[in-house]
Image (spheres, rainbow, N blue to C red):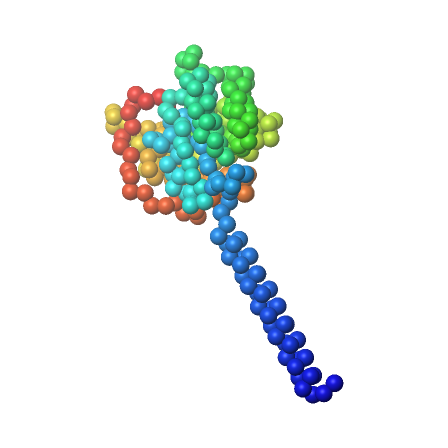
Length: 274
């Protein structure tokens, strides 16, 4: 083989090698870009859709719902169906569960308890050991029936301060929180234990500091059940922090800090159920 043929062969090999390397690099770059741009999606190929179900402590008006939405990024959306004065029983009996399920969400966050307590009336009160569990089970089953994933949330603590210790809360919601924990374990449902985390936070802050996120009622007294705009973000942060631990696939849906919001809620009515 003469020198010209050898030189030509070497050049051909070099060209083919460089071409292959460039193609491989381009493919790798394309894969990286594709992964970086990919958003978490539901089984149907759409962005993740959250649906919130609960009472006033979750609602858009005076609960942690608005704060939760501020933590979402462009990978997810949220519909808050929570409404004041409802219990696990009355929400269903009014047809609200059916309407929430019709929204075809991907994840349903479910929190009831405040209006399930005794003395709330026959249309609302439930027993934490029997009827409350039965109604909460229905939320789980109905959510799963459409292929969505239920997330149980224990009730946000009511700030019922001990008369002898201003830094201790004696909550009447304990039996309902215990029932939700047991149900979550029994039905293999992810659990956000907001009751425990919110109680811990409030007791760490103390009674006076908690007034900073407590709305003012029409009678100019502090509302120790609901939340103002600051409180909504504080308690939503607790929800998000636990949610991404029990459902880590949802982490790409959330910001590390909430988006700005110029809206400031007005005073809550003292006559609203709590």
